[in-house]
Image 1 (cartoon, helix red, strand yellow):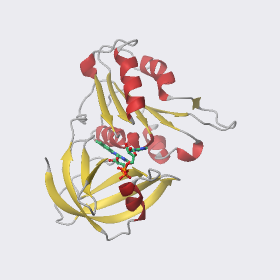
Image 2 (spheres, rainbow, N blue to C red):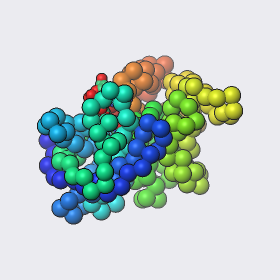
Image 3 (cartoon, rainbow, N blue to C red):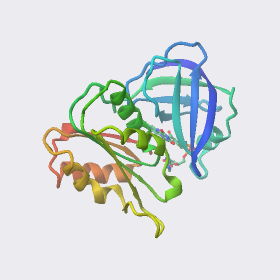
Image 4 (cartoon, protein in one colour):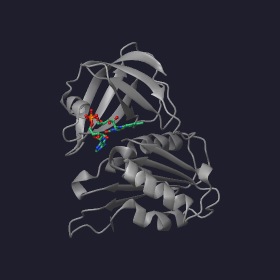
Length: 235
Ligand SMILES: Cc1cc2nc3c(=O)[nH]c(=O)nc-3n(C[C@H](O)[C@H](O)[C@H](O)COP(=O)(O)OP(=O)(O)OC[C@H]3O[C@@H](n4cnc5c(N)ncnc54)[C@H](O)[C@@H]3O)c2cc1C
């Protein structure tokens, strides 16, 4: 179990109709130390806890960003969406083994749906901050055009020859010219862009059903070594 500390909401804004970015700051001013991909637990008013992957890269400062989906009927995610800047919460962490070293130069495929992209964003941003030349592909799935978020990151990452982002929509409008359907349908093609299947590392994050299907595909049909497939589930 990680350390317990107080955090204050510094700012929040909508990323999409159902997702909010929440930037918290440690009240003790200590640096927020974590490995890209880890999560923090926030304590609810009833003493329960909910885990949230850190969406920002570690930068030595005391702030960190979360991306929170408002779950219909969900207790705490709705509270977080209503939280006012200046509000304080108790955090415990960081925790989690779903991590990637920023200096890792092996080709990496990141697969996320919805806010499952949060820890993947942390991993990619941390790698790019070190000047990494690792070939990286992000396959990001959401329902509609309106549900896509972090586009400005994707545009800035696209300036780097080693990074490409592919967005796929499961309920695209007729105007959408990008990929359609679930991430599962595009995995093989995006993976093939990275070459060297025996060294590619795959990082998968989102809800259990997607994670299980992508993991099965990666280890089964695509025959990736088990230890190269890393997963994090939100539910
Ligand atoms: C390691 C880890 C990291 C996580 N990171 C994030 C994150 O970065 N961002 C984020 O938004 N959530 C994340 N979650 C999910 C989060 O911890 C809560 O489960 C979520 O916010 C729902 O809490 P709630 O109190 O609103 O709903 P509850 O009242 O606890 O339950 C509502 C139901 O919603 C399901 N559920 C949980 N998450 C989702 C989801 N995203 N979409 C649809 N249904 C869901 C639960 O399984 C449950 O059945 C993470 C979970 C884990 C275990």
